[in-house]
Length: 303
Length: 283
Image (cartoon, rainbow over all chains, first blue to last red; front, side):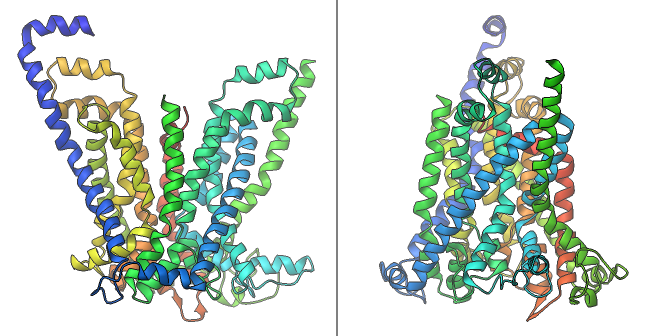
């Protein structure tokens, strides 16, 4: 490259130099829409929501931390906090585990079959979540629908899926596992493909059996990817809205509300935007922690 | 010895397929249940007799006829389509220019841009919809589908820029240096070198932008109440569910019809999408 550049330089060096200078200006112009978008439609609304959360319901007076204090005194708020953590931890745990098992299974299949079944397994994740949640809503219907019919066939008693606090939580979590497992599978499967075959051959020569190969080769090679994927899914699951909104609307009696749906309930439906803002902002520390972890991991990988 | 190896391999594949079955049942059962409900006559949906997993009477198209001719489904479909297309175009212009500048034309602070873009994930729709309620109101866009045009890019642009930065950085520098020396302008370098070479990345991010716009539920639910301005997700949810009488057949038919475009797009372009999604983290 250097040689070509220097020979051409003799002819058109002023042109190249001035064009190199204009390079910076070109870059600023090109990155401008992106900056406007992020500053105007992400950073500004975020700052604005912090400001809003310090106002009273009519948005006429600055009330300081009153909205936050009120929330911390509500039993319902702590119920919602508990729900959000329980929902996220349980759902992410099952998604990460089932996703890993599925990826290991698919990785064993010959190429053609693997491609087809990988595609089929992705359908839950590809389908718009709001629409598939309506399908799950119908599945959980207690009298005329599928799950209770199966339970009765096996001699069990039908469950009031969406009207009992425990089963309603189970229903929301199952729907989230259904939706999110394929995402873990696709990440893990790509990770499995990047493990060099030679490592397995070496392990085989050392006499490692299948379980040991997984324990000493597969798992350590995947661990960083598992960490990133889990944190990424934590962000998305914690901020989930569609499933709870459609299956239970937060009920029965707030027992399935998450931060997102509760903020919607208070902010839009009850018309208390400042307090709704405060509810939503309680998500921020968890999201921040997860994002910090992801960035640290990705940055380490680039070194 | 070699025979047993072949047998071992065959056995491993058999077991793998066996292990796959419960996953496929779990993944596909909801879709099957939705599909079969959409074709069942109402009398059969509410009947408690017989196995519910097959259609006993004659399959009916009544639910689909109702959706298409008695609701605004077609209008919502068209609204969803318009919004998704325009958002995708906006997204691609902003992300391509941004990713190109960040990955190639070094400027002050360009190194931190990747991190900054990633941080927009900290502010999901569940957090932004309240301040946006005010913003949309001030702009007079409540109850119009057009408010979605500036809300959706906040979901699509960061991820698409992220994907494209990955693809652009992977292009060998020799390629654009050669074009530069030949007198190409920055825009020519972008259109003649970067875009053709990064075509798989462009496909992946276009698909992402389109499907995210198609699937969004919270924003339309929060800001659009007029039937004719609704998109598919909130239209089906707020209109096909009336009081305590759930029209299950119509609801399932509508949800399935609304999913078709996205699922079809994926069926054709999935490989690009998977590559785009995974290449950033696997290295």
